[in-house]
Length: 178
Image (cartoon, rainbow, N blue to C red; front, top):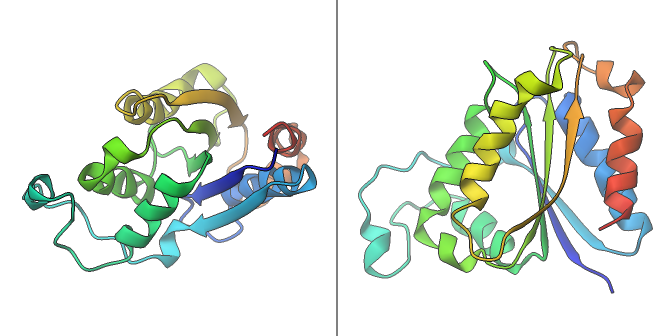
């Protein structure tokens, strides 16, 4: 059965290492007949949450930016892939800002399958766990969220270095299993 897959690429660099893995995951998911959309978060105008909680009185954020569109796509998806480079052992600002802005309707992001992709210069998977724990902190707040897989793109600092790692094949193969 075909699934609706949404890939959220948090890389600040188009064709950066984590973005490259998103593309490989996308190829695999499409090869299995899924409907796949990738959003390059940096291309979207997503403001920071101001903590005003106006959304708690009607489920609508007062900010007029691209987040309402992205959030609706998250709600409509069957599968969500979240990808980030590792910055100081955590996710980058683009991804964290997006997560924070789901507060208006996060309860509607229910019963989804999640895949996480992280890339780092460090060659130690254990040191990347803090980043993955950040994703898990988000999905722990969602009803019926199921973690289906994690890709650790280790040892990639310069743009494109990820292409010679086993993470490329892992991303494609994991995409195929969606």
